[in-house]
Length: 77
Image 1 (cartoon, rainbow, N blue to C red):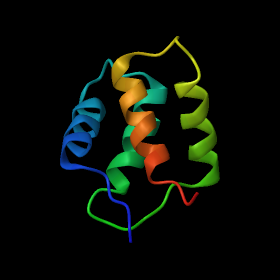
Image 2: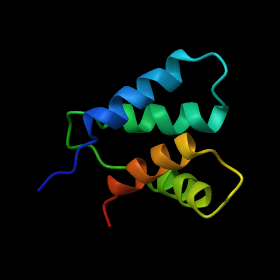
Image 3: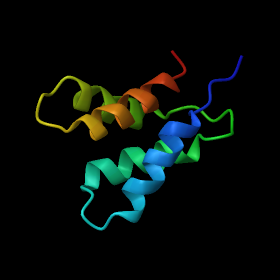
Image 4: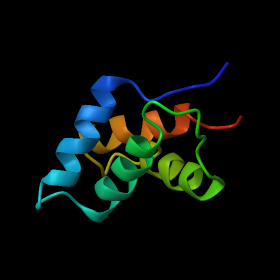
């Protein structure tokens, strides 16, 4: 069974990418999440590591955490 990014996360990712004030990490995670919308693509090991670090830190916003969780949900593991 393939895992796909939800339309809600896809919309959030699109908003992040269209916002000039989005951080680099938000843009990176949004790009990864958006690339997995409607496909069976899986998260790379590099993106898994980035998303994991974000989720382990209280330093990031709820938006960033949501994107990171979505990226990890697409993991091969």
